[in-house]
Length: 123
Image 1 (cartoon, rainbow, N blue to C red):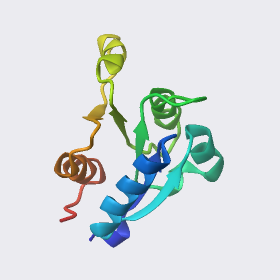
Image 2: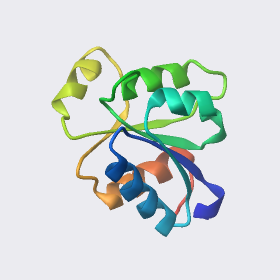
Image 3: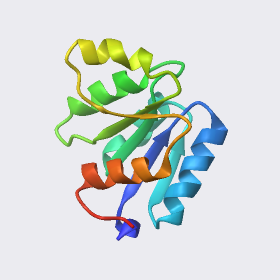
């Protein structure tokens, strides 16, 4: 079932991008990696079923990307990842609700989040 799913991975750290892409491909998921939220937006985010994005990056942050995508007609779900979860607390205190996964990434949790947002079983 994973082959029918396309996930965009957005992180300014190349090692993180390639690691997560490799993990998702091992589940048969198609991936595309982007070094910034702006690069994803230029490429067209709505061709993906889900976006896995770092919280803090130069330029547009992961939360800003999520807000931009939530304002589009075809909403693309965004899973936020971070090594600094306390930085996401401010957004949550202001009423934002989003899936947050801490780095280093727990592969089982990431797959469970993806299954939840795309509405199908992967593994």
